[in-house]
Length: 411
Image 1 (cartoon, one colour):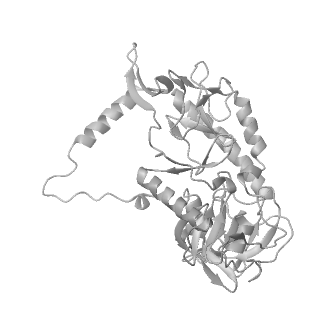
Image 2: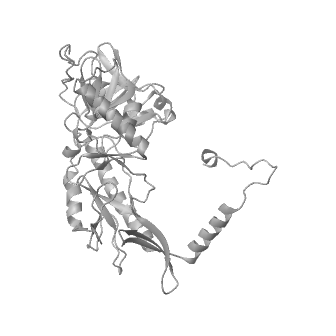
């Protein structure tokens, strides 16, 4: 087994341990492990927020934004921010246990395209993934906020959120320069409205400081918006599928929350404790409470700002015309970087043959070897075969192409 394969296996095992721990915490005290629906726990309030119960404040004739107060005694508001998560100390202890050492290049410390310092750990007993016994090639890491993140072959693992080391401020990741320009325009447009420099269009939604194309509506004194749209804008790691029976919301990189839709009634209503048109929601991050909330329409999964605040801890502001949603104060900034997950991050990966004739796939950063994997003869032969096949013509002139079954059809 190759060095990198062993690293991946070790990383997988320890990642499973972490996930099991988080799920256990969620089952006992909260809600939200990935692919686990939103049902129950022990606790108190069973009441659903009532229509018109929010305090929208003054008339805002001067265009000043104010926070919408909902007045819930039991809520995730104030308990969901990245800085307040109850797994913070565990994450910090993992970082401390690594005894991390900055990776140095010829011109100084090596940083990724995202601005993170690259680290290695001299500790043999790796928590996430580590050096193969008997070698001197440890895993590479960055610190995102207060959490350790693995860098494999120059690629940072994808958790949906990336943060500045230490501060925890979110780094907004986009795929290309056009997306970066669009983000900065949305940020500038949003800030102009929030600062009162321009008047926003009635029904507009600003998310974490950026103006979006989404709209909110008002019904019976309540503000409603499409949860699938807003959730995907905050974190696009789990796009909404109407047939899934729920909308997945990621308040941060450690928790996910599934809110059932009417499609769940015919799939697995017991998992969400659906009774009539409501389901049982429970708090998370150790905040133990529960209440019955409306099941969302699967075609138009609209949720009230009141329920979204209570479930996810989001804060809502309005000037009477525009709705501003703050998912986390640390997410409100224009810190945006271009980084395609499959990109090199400034690293160079090459195939090399050593003096003994062995083939290696090696990754360098600023001339320093940061990762390597020995290629077996079978892997080399397979790569050559794949290259030859990709260069060969796939169709006979004059004949229609062969039908290739879709992924769905092969499952």
